Image (tube, rainbow, N blue to C red; front, side, top):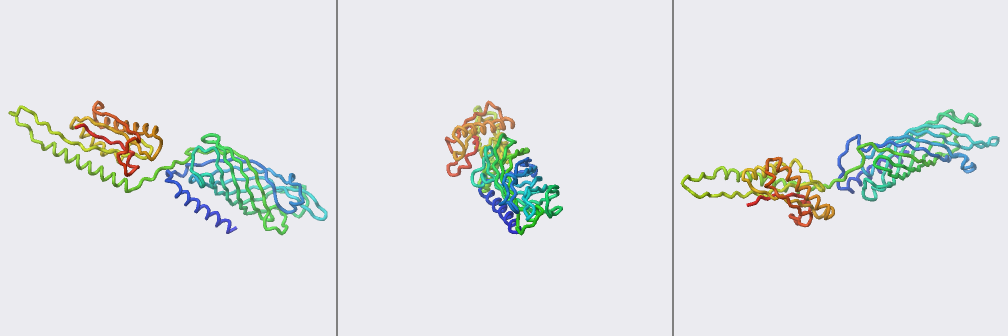
Length: 375
């Protein structure tokens, strides 16, 4: 029994480690996310004393379960089940040759391993998932056949380890059908008779239905290199400083003398701005809005026209999808400029998709919108 428990702990640890290293990153989920409830019913075959001398069909017994569980990652989950059923056996002595049954209830904790996701990529809408089961239960026998003959104990209890496999068939976003087979090991005295065996066994076949509560499923995110973020932040800070210097220069420009008939136009160069986006996203992050605000302020101050050019990285997605994504990014920036007071007539939108990559050495940097003012 100790070896069994140690095996469960070791397998949980190894699988969790595999899950964390195999995927890019999993969005953080709360305690109440990815829960499910499950109802199952089926038959069991009891392997105990005199099993080889019994009619296998007469040993078939009903069994049912109701349980609740949770997935912690696409690969690893757990469930707690309440089970109730009947185990049929055969009792043979010199004077007795008879079948009898016992009724039992129990609770079982199972570790669940989604083998499909462990050995393959995670897909939220996959139709079929193959799940491994390793569990430990506590079962109580409370009633035996009143007509049976023999020196049966009044009741018994047992710790019951089990192993199993389940096929889960997805019906829609919330519901799925499952077919499960598992093997339980019970103490020899569980059926009321001690025959010198170390364990009795039960083979169960169950069919059931599961409902997954919202929030359900997992989102796999791309891990961003902190060094890339640091470089982009440095560029933003440098641009802010340059904007402030240019604004100070503008304030210090001398006022033209009245007698001068011609105007001298001071051309202020506004540094292009870069708005960085997460993979597959067109929403402007909070840490990008400060630089965008300063750029918009400079445009308003100088009455310049601005070109907003959207890009997408070539390493992700299709050309058609990237074209649409770059358009959405450019429109998002244009809308923000207008919210900061820029006249929409001064804004021109252009989209490049992944046909042009402004940062040829770093693919992730190309998830950007670049803003440039007209001279």
